[in-house]
Length: 240
Image (cartoon, rainbow, N blue to C red):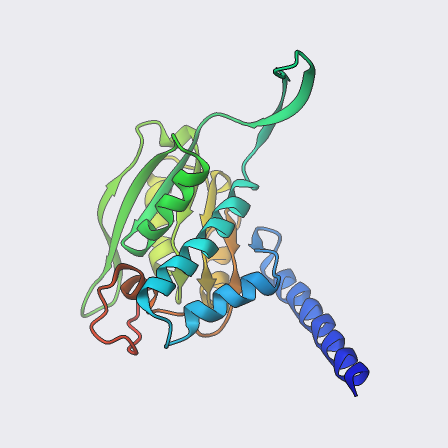
């Protein structure tokens, strides 16, 4: 009986892998998924669980953010370098090319700033505040602050939850207005709906998108739960 159960689980894993490959093929090579394992799935489960306490939520959110940020950094260009070790030996290694920065979409995107600083201690971080009109629901930029030379930098754009993609599309449009090219932008995201991912890929086909999960239902309570501002712990508030 155990062998049958194991065989069934193996078949399910193969089906999931094939489904992911088919899904990603629909979005093109610029959409990338964080490599999935049991640890990542557990973190995603905890963050979606309505019974997760706020302190646990923040702790496990920071863990997932760190994984996403580190994988996002893998998308940045490296150059070869030669160093001398403490023993005097020569070592052929790698280093980041100069000119990287982060930009967080306020407010939920600010939850990812510390994860980026933990990996790149001196990196500069800009901010974009995008709000939705109460009547038309159209996204508009309220505030934007970037490094003066952002047009020559690689930009890690941070936004954890995407339901429609409207906020990110508006933020990227602002970056492009500051002469940042699409291929210099890497969007770091935790959870995205297929609808949002498709909208962003179609709008900016040269921009790299990294997310941990594509799912029809996004955990829109993320920002309120992370910062402890939710009025009702079991009520989802649309963020995107």
